Image (tube, rainbow, N blue to C red; front, side, top):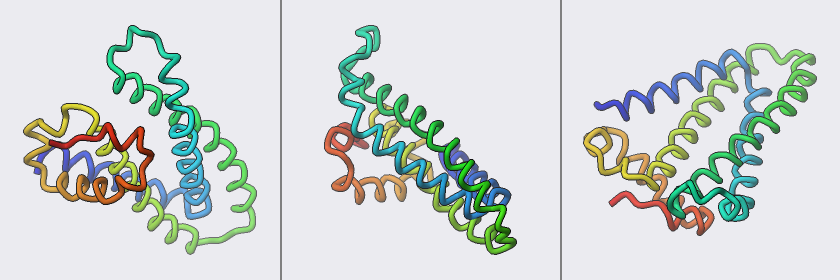
Length: 163
């Protein structure tokens, strides 16, 4: 196993543990926030890419900066709203079922975070590094990204390269 594998395990494990603590209600709103952030990043990235300074060299680099910046901004905004709504629903008192379902949703979120990172890494030289090539799990994550590629926005999918 390499640093890639340990990082993937850490992200998935941390997401799962955090979800045990936060519960399913919070996770549902969190996953919805991720969905909104992905839609916002996809829709507005080409617009923002054209407005970024020329100091950021390369079309792909500007696109990547636009996607990541928009994603983070939208995620922060929608997460705040989700926390308010989740707090109101949690007042009803769902108990341990909320925690158990939270663990499952947290695991799914952790895997999705790693998959997004792997897709973004496909726009960089990272897949050619020894750490990536010798990782036990990188091939599986790449396979899932490749499977999902037809469903990804063309502007995003066309920039992903693992060879």
